Length: 79
Image (tube, rainbow, N blue to C red):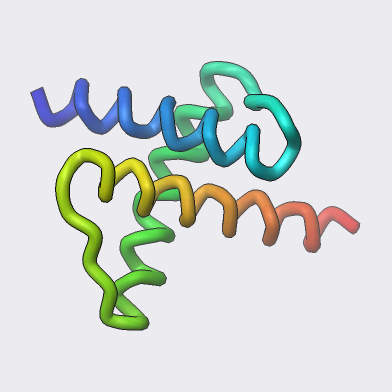
């Protein structure tokens, strides 16, 4: 069940981050990957500054923040 929840959170977070950074999503697979890695990056960043965001909405929010950071970094590298 946790795997399914993680995949759903990844898709949602990746889509939201895509909309925030570009105005639309990146497609199913890219949204999933962005959201999953975004969750890792967001958790790491929040841990550095001592923040914790609980619950399902917190998990999605953390993944969105991480995915936005990943998109931002990728854009800076590709320029």
